[in-house]
Image 1 (cartoon, rainbow, N blue to C red):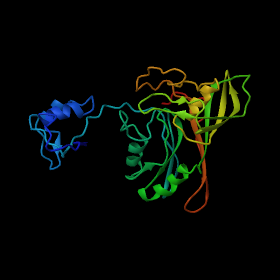
Image 2: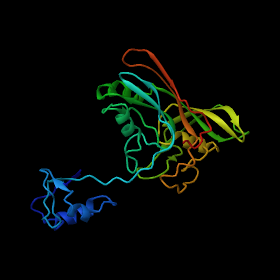
Image 3: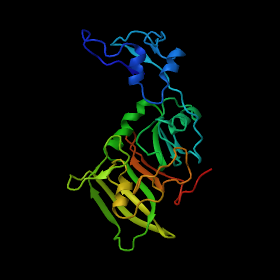
Length: 291
């Protein structure tokens, strides 16, 4: 959907035609000329918009973008729990939680709405596309409020595990506390020295795998990329992180090196019946390339 901005009707038209307006305002990657010629852009009455049609403000036009062919994301999308209100899945790395950008069909929501016949299924929290592990979803809109409130008020106990280098001189456990900020449109988040603390993570070493350690991470906040930034700050960046410490140019459909970060456990008291709930991932580190 594309909406026209309001403007003073007495002002001169900023574009001579609807085609000129669409070419300037529609996102890159859309062949406006071809869509207009095929009558695939329509107004609010369903009438095709013509390329040379005079520009008019205060109108809506509608179109559907062509979707690219999406290669299947490798790995099993495990359903670890399902009841009337909740679905909890254990997703592989590279599978997006929601349809977004170049990942539409290959997303948890699109796949499971069809597979489970749950048209209102929606996630209750965020989990990065490159992160593996537990994602909790509401089966219907009416259940979203109570469960989203748990996440908003930090009443869900989350445990992650990460594979990262060992540092013999690093004293663990340690509580990392700082201020993380991520600019919209930027790939990486940054630590802001001296700013009020908005990110906390308890870091513990659980075991050793060769030259790497398996770290247990207990976040007390949920900033974007928090765990990845905190381990980087300790000098132990997570194995196969495509952003930290350096941004790697990885093709969007390259599934060969999954980020070694796992959303391993979720625990909380159910807001509707008070019952204790706990869910655990079926995956273990190190994560391999799944088929």
